[in-house]
Length: 454
Image (cartoon, rainbow, N blue to C red; front, side, top):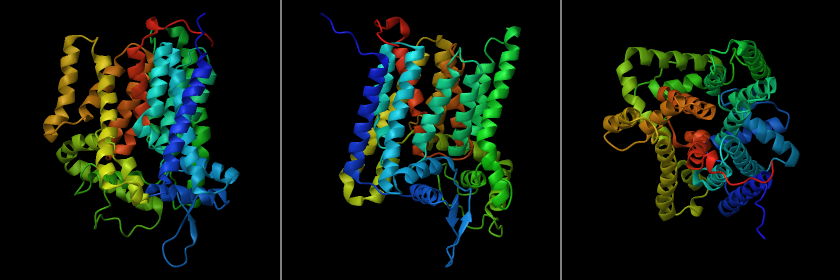
């Protein structure tokens, strides 16, 4: 007598539990502490949990708390809820990161099972659960795991074809919260909405439902974001839609001495006299735009390096752990680990590009190869930035909605970092989407075995 296969929900839960176990084992083994941006996120969350508001200690001896919006509020707000319920111990933050990783596994499995086969869903969930770069987010207090979950959640909502306005309301609310976590979502949200609204343009009977859906999406988005924007206008030195670091980041990626990755602001940037977060950020934004206008060729020449830093490497997790606990990461482990992480990430990206391009006409394959090779020629070394650009273009020209949604997400991600700067931790937000692209093509629906359960 053959045993019936596990139901889809049980399988999903099992892989999520395995993801939790692996991440918790890493956290226990490392015993991490907050470092770099994580220290700020932890401090913001503690102040929120204590009822102080979103504040930062002012410089000087007085140490007074003053309102801030330099860092996006979304991730500290999630930590603050956990701190309020379970105590403001730093270990709570790492449990939150573990649960976010497990939740991402669930959403990835749900998306893949909806559009493809049972095997595809299983493969996508397992890859997400044991992806070294995703696993190593658990001992870090960074916003990328939450952003990755929200991005996957938005796409899951938009993949629902029979949910009516609820689909748009859910997607709009998630996009609004994702904006509070990662302000670049301001560009992504309309791009994803356009993908859905642009389907079947010749069907005039669907114009009214689509217009109603777009309105619901915008209202849900605004209901999440606008209260924070009003708070900023009330307590800061000027209005700020989400955060006050857009000008900072533009200046870092454009002012003289820019390398394509993060660096401190150069001395003499011209905004030293500005007082207040909003005015300083506006000034830096103006300086960044002036740098682009004054030397556009230099800005274009920096794009391959920016995409390379955003897509080529996977060394941030181990470097952050080593910063917090040097004794936990000997030099040999440090040298050996990040190439393994990088190889997994690169294999995932190249694998996704291969399965997408392999059935396209040879002219398209040649064009994709040329696009992928351009950054390599400009940097005189192998880089996957061009591969990511080619993959985004290929996905946007596919026939199915999931491919176009992932293509739009990847395209906005690449355009954002081509203008600002790249760091290897940023691609964590799109890593699970690459997993889905790979899995649903390796095991399409026609290869699905008989499914038992919903």
